[in-house]
Image (tube, rainbow, N blue to C red):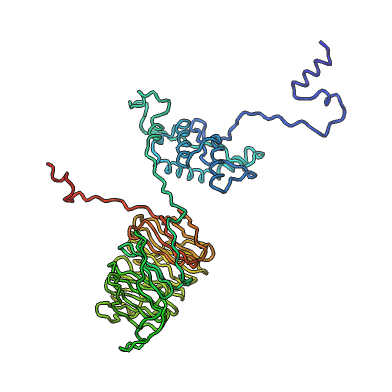
Length: 534
């Protein structure tokens, strides 16, 4: 064999070029280093016999690689990460089941229910938080050249031995022909929780000309008989939500109005509607006006029953409590009227500016009032002389007030443009439980009648949206857009499934946002034929 050829062969086997070895000069361009594909893990102080592998559930991304922000791109990005093709579509629940099946097959995690998947993920996240500091220190000591930007696929943790040996037990898995383990089969057949889809488009839109764009007014309300009352200018209209029939209840443009002095004389003049509120029984409607009058109407006969002229300025909010009606005015006072006696029972003094929000608690024992002085008061029906408690943490006018119908004493209040927060309080302890920054003016709030952990809010500057929240985490379930101006008015249907919103763009929009009420059967009903069987 030629000596030069043998030398070149030996040099090529060692990864060196024969030309480079023969030349006295080195080329500035060097060949890339060859790295081995063998995986060498970094072991901690634990012994090898007590270690096992565990897949990290979080997807590793490099610093230069960002995940898309839009939902469609994000879902496509997740599909590519787990190896699904572009023609395969899957929901978030299916992706979670797919990942759990991989862990059951590779790591023998034995999770057999979708409900248990969240518990396992929470445990893994806690373990990741505990071991992240020790992992970084060991990596820096043993191999400083490895970058920490990429998350490893495998990591080490202590092996957890089962107290009972499953090999000695005989179950159906020993006789099945399925290649999947028994836990994976149960996981595939476990019931999936249905995801409620909230429509982003209103199912009905009505024109509302002369609907005032005023933050301090309350011009719509929905009765228990499914009739919507709307104050438009000097008129009050009634709209049947089922038949869509609209009728005029009253017109204050040319009518006899009682004088402010309370005498029997009357004056002729024009007035505008500033607030409407249905009584607990569906045929009585209270109407507040710009002159400070409160009119009581019988919707069935379409006649005015009585008028009260105790305020000196406009009445922006009304709240019923059985036969008692509370009215809040710009004159900074709250008056409780007794309809049967046709007289004022109590007068609440505490606000220094206009009162724009009034709500009674579900048990009708505590009245919450909000005003333009950024204060929220709690009043007792038995002690109206002074408030039970006052909250001064809002930075703007407090108009949005809502009591939870499911949790006793839980109340939510929202602030105006300078505040933008929803604050949850307890009337039992007079403490603030939770605070949520919405990013825009909070105009109205309402709790769901059917779901104890959902509520809706309407907003003004600067987003003009409706948001459905999940309480207490305050995660937005849906954001609804459609109004062109501030969404100032809000009312809920008697069945608790729909809401109607009004804005300065002179439109009323009806939305399906809350879940349906669950049917509760009475086993002792006489209509149940099984009770008569022996």
